[in-house]
Length: 325
Image (cartoon, rainbow, N blue to C red; front, side, top):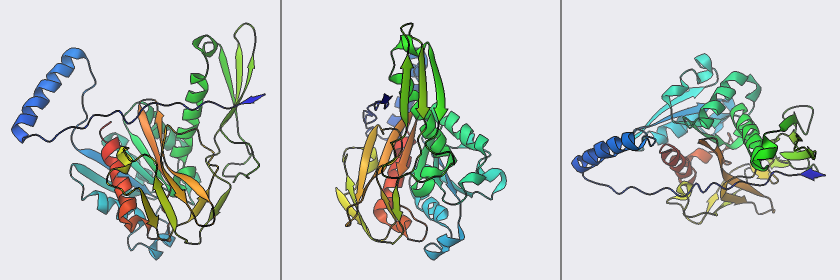
């Protein structure tokens, strides 16, 4: 009998807001908090500057909507935020733009047609840093199939599998991994079983074999016709939604339709709908180890989605929130 890993809830919204204080008082308080943290052995608060790397495949087709690539459009907007430093890179840059991940707190990723060209070891390093709490990933639009996002979702599926078992069974667990399709980047059908999924075999001696079908990280239908979508904020009190109206329209965008083959998110912050009945979980958050992964759907390259103030606000909120973790 096939079983599906149960969702895990981590309560990501339990952060306390910090009031603004005069500079002198804040510095003094910061010194005492730092000393107290050293005494108590707590994790120090991250430095005030949030360091952001915007990674963009830089397709020529982007010139239909952006004069200087969409990644640079996002980066220029983020540079207007206080306490944020930004660097914009592309796939064809030295080291694929990923040589100095130690220098960044948040990685924003946009890719579409050249996912296979990213070196697997780059994606694995990104996921390792996320799990260690040193980096957060924001995957945009077609980055659902980017190597960093796919590897992150595989890692989360493994975590969910283990979390679904009592400790005695985890100690005697063997995982065999498989894929829904023999070829990567295969679009699932509506009738295909959802992934990730798990098939367990258990013995009276607590030996457990688990066949884990890894997440496909795609969905059955898409349509690049530029029709408008309605974005609904499902969690108005989530940091990603700060300053946004409960509903807003994206005038020209591509359609994606559920089901999205990913591990159950810890939070679904945004849901997108189309007049023809399609809908999508367009803003999702996962905890991965000590770090976070955010997926935000809007952003097809031939439409000026990253000139929309509400879309840019979501990305800015993601940077300011994740940069404090």
